[in-house]
Image (cartoon, rainbow, N blue to C red):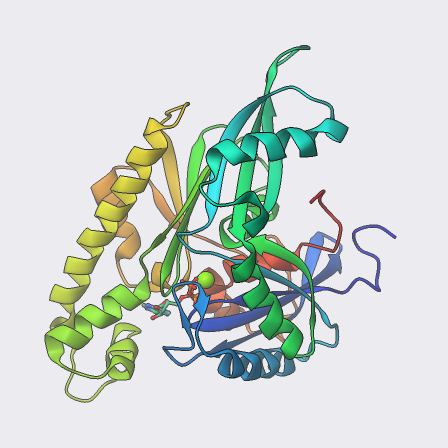
Length: 355
Ligand SMILES: Nc1ncnc2c1ncn2[C@@H]1O[C@H](COP(=O)(O)OP(=O)(O)OP(=O)(O)O)[C@@H](O)[C@H]1O
Ligand SMILES: [Mg+2]
């Protein structure tokens, strides 16, 4: 039994809209050790903005990434993201754990503009006032059943069993906590910018105090390059990633990159304004970037200068041991930002948190 029982060798499977990632962790002397990882790219239209558009292609890619990582386990921990996710911090009168489920059901109806039977609800207690008769803060998460079922279906179709369905923003937090065991007292914004969704999770003292997903990501950059240079998506994508593309120089990309980075900064502004308008407005002391866009040359400096706060790129393997003969450190560190969600999922085990 317990978190680390051998049998429960679940692994993290991040079904991103552009890249699938597998990370399998096992107990190590320092906490966690890396047992397996792999990444496989998806064609651009297989998943759009957190929605599976071409299930057979996704199923094949899942089989491929699991095979590539040589994972034996069938127990996949997966996640969803997207602007239609409802993540809200609500305040409830203090109730005992047994009554919490009912209290949340009652309260949820006021916060979710969808029929309650159409969503899966999850929650986490993120704070409470001292003494009896006080209040408790709960992070409420509601996701449409149809969306979860779509993801579960492709994973099952690939011959796996989805044992936990998490949310990207919270997976990034899980990852951050094992790599930064001393929970910072100030508010830190964890921002994962993938190909199509930007997920923000503001944490403080080890709890999430605000979370929001919006539609924005690396595809915005790639599309801007396509349009400006009139080249196909694949070429624009390769050029953006710094690969050699005949007839395209880095200077050609700069105007598009700058324009989209300004849009990104505005989107972050909107999210921070929204955060500030929630009950406990508070200064964000630091931004930690993850997702493939964190690898875009100069994006961290750009955001740091526009925000006046330190911006760092996530280090998901800082506190995870790995055998450098099996996993070359350069490869892992280069892939690092893309693997933040998968590392966070790799920590989860079936039944480890109350649903
Ligand atoms: N070296 C790089 N420079 C710039 N952009 C990069 C680089 N490597 C990857 N990207 C971009 O990062 C994005 C992929 O990141 P990531 O794998 O985090 O997204 P995803 O999980 O597939 O998507 P999402 O989370 O939005 O569903 C793509 O848009 C890709 O172009
Ligand atoms: Mg992602």
